[in-house]
Length: 496
Ligand SMILES: Cc1cc2nc3c(=O)[nH]c(=O)nc-3n(C[C@H](O)[C@H](O)[C@H](O)COP(=O)(O)OP(=O)(O)OC[C@H]3O[C@@H](n4cnc5c(N)ncnc54)[C@H](O)[C@@H]3O)c2cc1C
Image (cartoon, rainbow, N blue to C red; front, side, top):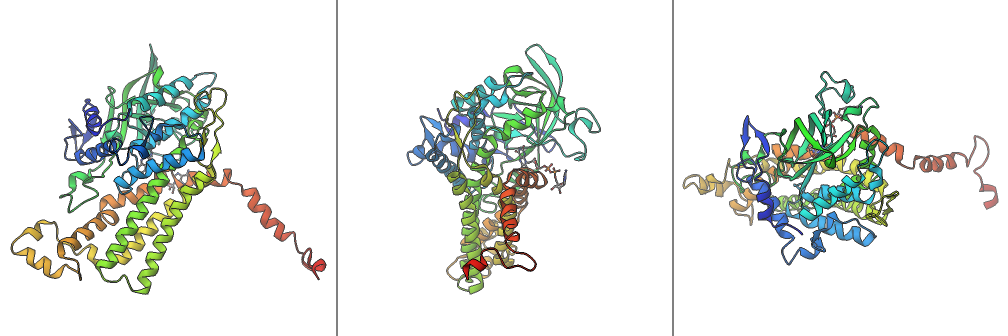
């Protein structure tokens, strides 16, 4: 059953080891760096209980993201659920609970992928999915190795324990040590998946494992980056960063014990990679992400339109064209979602597909291409809106306090205004725009949209290898084959 926001917040008070600015955080639901965002996530859970959203968000009492879709209609229904949560944060919470929920449903659709001669993780993968769905748990994931030296495999870094690896087998499980990046929203999760989504080298056997642990597991540490929420002056001054700072943390496993039943893959380079790509897990990730991306562009374009109205530039032809370009980008983002659904594929669940039998997933080709489009389009959209906004984004009072001040308030009201827009409204809009487009929080979002799907040098290669390059080549070849240096084009004589 879906949890209430209050139940979710209580689940975070479990003694987890979160560090920020050299201090251990006692309670993320009360700390100034995390509490507003925790409350924003709690509100997502509450939406599932509100009469206006329950039907779109849930089915049979569970969030729709946990379900294994079995038809095109199921995919559409899941996307409509994704959209509700995406709109609640205007697209600025990327790793909401529905993200990894879709990943887990992907495992359940093809559990046979987890079965190998050396370790059979199929039952654990199914149990993982059931545990999340039944408890309505918030799972996050850390699937990238710390950068350190990108030219060397995990097993050949300067020290043995830089990347999470198995160091010893004990009764009932394995002790792991090392780090993973980047744990977005992990401080707000109930469980975190630790694995690797990019190819490992054949010799990286000790690093080839994937497991999921509760955040209060002894030895599991989260080292938070700078908190934008803590830096925010107020909701009026920093409306997004004060409430939707989903956090990113370095995950450190300091001799953490992983029980066998929480292990999904173990000492298998191939399965540790394939579990993301040969199940619908990754494509399901993209389905959520692409819906959120579309929502975020709708929101940013809305800000752009409001800015042009506030500056009274909205009737200028060049400005209308810029808005047209933005609307074109919104349509592109939407089209990728709809096209991935329309090109849905049957899941090959293998022999163990009892749960996932008959499962479908969004089309791979379009889903994979969404990563390329979104990573390139987002900075273009931000640039377009900043050009529309001009210097007003910067010429703002340091905080809303100036508006409340008896001497400064009248000055601000006199000089920072536009026709039909009192100073309070104009400052409010421009502060929202700066938070979305130019603040440190906004810079993090640009980096997020470029990299959260993985690094371009990896996914561009994948697109070229897995795409139907032969069909493109053949079409071009057919043109070349249709004429010669001296002769006429094939068919030309017959046509005369
Ligand atoms: C804000 C943010 C949040 C994220 N959240 C999560 C999360 O919650 N969970 C998660 O698992 N991941 C997350 N990621 C994604 C992940 O952590 C990595 O950013 C992603 O996998 C890319 O790896 P990298 O950043 O180490 O880049 P790198 O792989 O180091 O690449 C950086 C650049 O180095 C160059 N380069 C490096 N290696 C090569 C090569 N072999 N060939 C050619 N060029 C190369 C390229 O120019 C490349 O763009 C997040 C990323 C960001 C930015």
